[in-house]
Length: 440
Ligand code: UD1
Image (cartoon, rainbow, N blue to C red):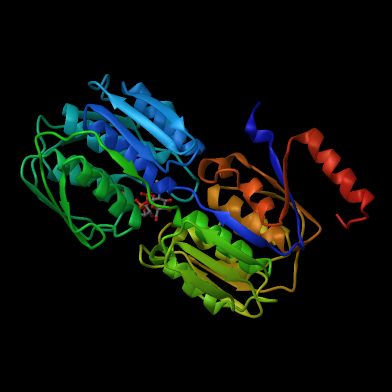
């Protein structure tokens, strides 16, 4: 059945309590899976979450000639014996922007990579010019024609690449390509995200020589070949941040397990500003106790280690019910405020001026029918619904499946009243609400 008809129903007012465990990071799993193209043989990747985006990347690899199977709940095995084609499948690239991460490995292994210009969440233009500029500096010929881009080079040559912006995807694509290039590559102004470091660690396990990942300068000494390996993906810091923020808005007391505390420091800082109690266990869990009412605080998204853009909508949900006025500034993407209109349907008082949203906290939100415009916006609407009077109905739930595994189930496990439903089930939920005389 088409998931586009699914919806989530959230009844607000419950306090969240309990323990919830995070998955491996989607944004680390995707480049690591793409990097499997760099070597023939079988790689075992552990901690791979069961998400639609991961499924899309697995399909991309299959179309390129890989044998890919999920051998356990969190384990994916990828096997390559040569590469069938250097063309990234158009339908899948349009569906998921991260599919372009196969370009670096394809180019390095086969001397050619071809793809259409990518799709993905509707949060801005998101070009790939920085990826292409880097390939060109490594000696590749780049041609763009009628929505397709082709890069080719018999053998890439190591060089110095300065990224105008520390793009996560460009850093990853270039790091993968440089691993099989001739000589040294230096990526300056590289992205420092933990997912970049995870990919570098994976490449090193494959035999690549990468140093400096996690700093602005990454150095790669190219190798003639790499080998398959077994690797475990880092926990998902954005999933963790989402549950931490849910605990915060719902005045809850939640222990979020399987977190690298260092990776969520910018999120913890904002939750403390908002009046939460946060305690860290270096073993990998974080307890968040939410205040009766959050306090206003300003948020500015930035590349890591700044506050992550992928947490901006969820944080805005929290601030929309805070005491006071908050300024939320989005510097990473130029069009990432589409959730604001949806929050407004729930009674939020938010005014957008360019890249800044002025959020005047209201006493409470009110349940409404809203639409998830992208993955994180969907999570944010659910979080807002936790503190709304009545029921919030979220459409566009298929976006959530791209990046959260069993989101509704995990929320229920800590006390949220959330159901996922198609039309018929929706009516049953509304009826049951009516018999309990709830204000819908
Ligand atoms: C990755 C994450 C995404 C996150 C983003 C920023 C994955 C699969 N996705 O996306 O969840 O929101 O990092 O943390 O890891 N840009 C250019 N030219 C380029 C490349 C990027 O102008 O060639 C711009 C983009 O339009 C955007 C900004 O740079 O405004 C950041 O993009 P980038 O860091 O590349 O994000 P992604 O790798 O696409």
